[in-house]
Amino acid sequence: MRYMKPLQLFQHLRNSTRNQRGRLLGLDVGEKYVGLALSDFDNKIASPFSVLVRKKSNISLMASDFQSLMSEYSLKGFVVGLPFDRHRVASEAAPVKILIDQLCRTKMLEGVKYTYWNECFTSKNVELLLKPLNLNHPVLSKTILDKFAAVGILQGYLDFVNRKMKLTAVECRHGSQITTTSELKVGWGTV
Image 1 (cartoon, rainbow, N blue to C red):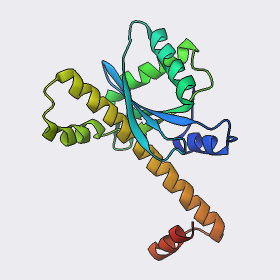
Image 2: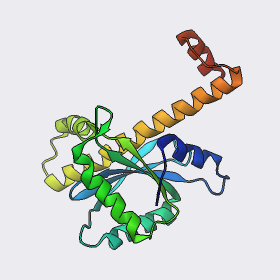
Image 3: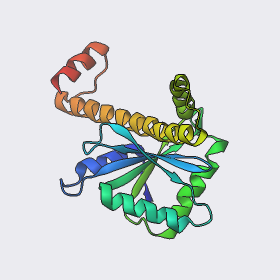
Image 4: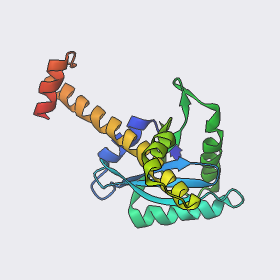
């Protein structure tokens, strides 16, 4: 596995040949479960996918699960939720970093690129959305929460990088940097 900055990961995917392009997998890493979200092939929309049980005692089994998902769903990269606190990595980020380090050490996911994305309040937002559903089964509600938290992480990332790519294209097309809101609206209309 190799870390890339958020925009670099997306540019790497965009610059790949059509046959090398693939999807992204969003990860919401928790103590017991890892919620997963999957992007479409255009990397614009995230959808809830699955939940993996976090296998702390045998990380090779978890790496094997990711290998299977990579080949079956044409995955090329991971967007891993990481809690930030005022633009700094929060203390709650340790379990996330430990999992990624352990997966890297297995050497089973060579060639996979990954990046971190701010996951602050993702689970809380999903909890608020799910509360009216009154899901009484604790495991069911937890797995739904984890999947949709992963969607929030991945969709936030996709929205950011796609918006950034459009702005860059507009700047290149006009030969100068957009500085006003009216220029931005005109620029968006011409993309």
